[in-house]
Image (cartoon, rainbow, N blue to C red; front, side, top):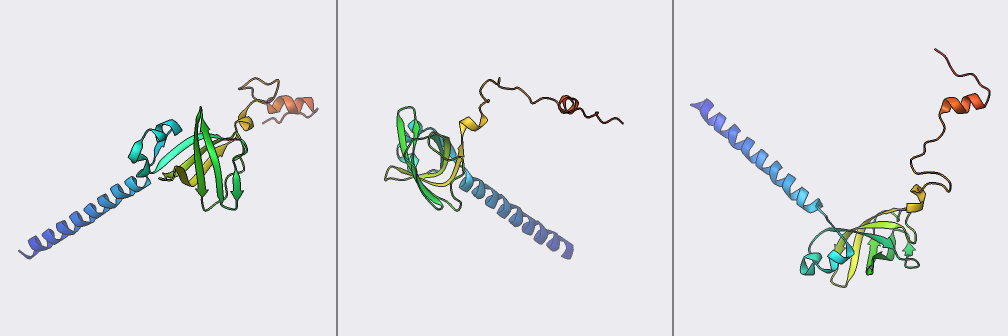
Length: 157
């Protein structure tokens, strides 16, 4: 009889622990979920835009960046749509964050019409473009060919 009560207590404890872990996992996923939207989709979301954590991408409008420490204000452009962004993060914007760079702002849309970003990612398209005269996908010359052209003998086993 005593072992039956003990087994019941253990079962109840396991159910409570598993239930708590499940609840924390689901609430954590919901808190970290963010929706990717374009600027035009953001403008068409209505009231839902103010209650969701969002990711918005676009190109940084030339001359729109005002940067100071870990904050920046700028405008994202997608086709003819524009979005003012106010970035306040724990780190300064990345080095690739410049005029005409592709940027991804992560945060919330305010009723003031400004996107309030807490994270910012940027990439400079020219950094990944081939050099003039090169074809995309060209690989550098093999190491053996470079070694032979320098007059050194290749290593043998």
